[in-house]
Every structure is written in structure tokens, then in C-alpha cells.
Length: 262
Length: 281
Image (cartoon, rainbow over all chains, first blue to last red; front, side, top):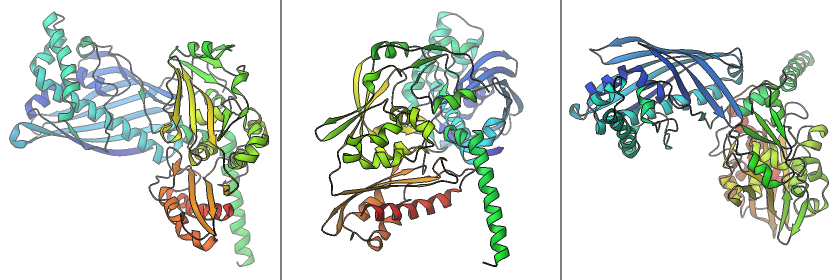
């Protein structure tokens, strides 16, 4: 079961600044709601993502990698894939993000195109629910990314990306200021994925060190649109049997109707 | 599958139940009719189940003047048999009778059904049409939540994780109110493909007021506001209400799933609303 999603938003930083952030895998990864970063190894992030809706939760464990980077067109491709920790399903996504100057170069228009594929239990739920769940995840990711990029304009992008090495007070203070500024300047961001008015839940992580190194704080995304009724309707054997019976009776009825010439 | 391992506690008082919910991975279990399937499929794995089944004070229907106070642990079976509900709030009994099968109804509770907030469940749309008030208890005390603010999304309510729904307060319906719950199912005892809970107050051969709650036309139970407005003032005949029924699916976002496509659900909503309104007269 695969789907494609498009998001775009504008951030008040010039493309070059946004570009630096976009290349920093360790900084983008925490933008994914419900994600925990276990290990960053160059361009590869190992981690988990927990998707929770009401009482239902699914956790995927896997990796996200920079597959491509094109400096000239300011575009990156991130490939992520994971397996359910408590099931046999998988999820994978390819995100292509590109930057374009806006407002005469002072701002950046970030365009994201996501292709997502889900197998296993969630895939049985049907297109509609998966698209909604996937869409919400990507919207939140876009929103968090936007907030992070805007927040950096206050703290200074160069300083923030040096945090990797520095554990000193100044580094921590700068990173600490960035999330705070991100919270305050959230209004500066225009996000036009599917209108998502509420503030992103997974970002910014309150501890400055979360921006610096893995593991970031784990926050399960309480995804509102969910799979619940779909699960209960589709997976429960009685329901599945009922549906099969309905199909069968419908076919038999149609066949007998044809025979009686109705 | 069998559920993942969990701890179990059966508190003897509401306060200790609320205290037990301080654990982030704790979950309330009452009748278990919605939760146990999730546990068995391992789609939910709380580490602690707080069994509130022993809190007998939360069971039963009480007369409170203009309202009925229904304890959250009242089972759906009890809803179908209670004399107070039969007399003053027949819609609830009628809808509860359509839930699943007798075995489920003897254990499933109204509180559990509402807290679980499955949009395909019958009771959420009914309490929505009744403009009920949900009363919850948490560490900070008691809180009354109007039903319009209770359901927020699929399987999600505005209850805090450490709050327990204790009471459902419904208004008493006078004799001038007619009611009906129309449920379309693929098989008997099945989830509703679409359900319509309708209330209509008759006056002088006209419909003075209508309330229509829709099951499974969105992520939460939806009030068909456009249809309600159109029904008010209409002549109390089937034809008079046809125009109102045609508006039943406005501002809804029905799901597309194994049972039905979204546009078929819209069609069902319109047809069932027409039938439900007619049955109210």
C-alpha cells in the first residue's frame, strides 16, 4: 500500500542557511514526530518511530539515509525504512525536499514530495486511513522542520550546526535558545500541507542536548486520525468473515437474479 | 494472538483507580469489549490494566429531576432494560439494543463505549444527539464535559490519560419527542456501516425541533446540523422531511473502507435520516 504526499512551507531564512540545516541528518531526524534517534553514523540515522492513536500504537525500527544531494538545485532525497517491532509489517518512505528562494532571497520555499509504503497490519486498513495517518505524520514533520528552520534564524544556523562538537555552555545555550525561539517564532512559518493548525508535538525537544546528539527524547505522536475503527472492522476475524459472507451472498444473489431475469 | 504481558490491578475506590492511572502505560478496563480485541491483536500493549469493574457506585441510572444520571459502568444490556431510560430516554435503549450481540452487551459499558470513541460505535452518536454531558473524575477532581467537546478524533477523547469517565448525564425527553435509531449493517451484530440517531419534537403537525447524530460518517460522531435546521418547521410527514434528509451528509467526511465507499455512505446517511425522521413521527 503506497501513497504520495506533497507539502510546502516558507521559512524566513535564506536558502543557503536552510540548505545547511537540511543536510544535517541528526538535526532533521528529531523533526519526525514520535521518533527516537538511536545512533547517527555519517549520513545514516538509526532509530525508532512510535505512532500512537488512542490506545493503539505501532513502533517501527529502522534507518533514514541521505540518498542524494544536489547543491545546484538545493534538493535532497532522504530514504527511510523500518520494520514493526511488534509485528511483521514494514514502512518505508522517500522524501524529496527542495529549496527555492522566496521574497527576493531572504526566505526559502521548501517543497517536499513524499512517497510512502506500508505493509503488514496497517496495510489492511485501506487506502483512506493509511493516507490520513501518513499525511498527518508528514505534515507534522514539515511543520517541525519549518519551525526548526525558522528558529535557527534567531540563534544562528552556523552555531547550531557546530553543536555536534561542542558540549560547552555557550553551545548548549545557543541550542537552548534555538528551540525557545522556534517556539516563539512558530507564527512566522506558513505551512501549507493539509492545514494543520496545532503546534507540532515532537519538536522542539526541551533539552538542548537533544539537538546535539542522539538519543533525542522519545515522544509518541498521538496521531489523531487513526486506524482504530479500521482495525476493529477489518482485522477482527468475525468482521472479516462477515464481510466475506456478505460478498458471497451478494454474488449468489446477483447470480440468482440474473438467472430469474430480474 | 494472546495479549502482551501486563500487570493487573482492581482498585476498590475511585481515588485509587485514578492514582493507578498516573502510570503512563496504564489503561482503564471496564467491560473490556473494546479493549480486549485490541490487546489480543497486540495493537495496544498497556503495561498495567486498571480494572474499575469493582466500583459499583458507577453503575446504575438515577433520576436527577430534568436529567438522568447514568453511571459509566452501566452495561448496554442494563440500558435496554432500565425503566427510567425506557420512560425518559428511549433512544438510548433502542440504540443500545443494536450494539453487537447479547454477550457483548452484558459486559460492555456505556462509559467504555464512549471513552473508546470508535466513530463506528453506536452510543457516541446517540449521546451526541442527546446533547449529553459527560462527567469525568481525575486527580484534579470532577469535570463536566459537554458532548460536543468530548470526542476529538478516531479513538480519541478529550479525557486526560489519568481521568475516568464516571457518569453520563442525559436530558429527559418529554412525550412530545419521537426517536429512532437506524443502523445499516452488512451482517447482523456487525459494526454500523452508517447509523442515524434521530430525535424530533412534534408540535401542531410540524416538527418543532430535530436532532440528528450520525455514526461512522467521520472520525467522530457528527451532528447533521444542516438537516436539523431544515427539519425544524417542516410538516411532520415523510415528504415534508425529505428535503431535510437530503442534507444529512453535509459537512461529513465518511471513510472509504472495506464495507462501503464514501459516496455510498453519503447515500446511506441521507436515506437513513429520512427513515429515522419518519419513524420519529
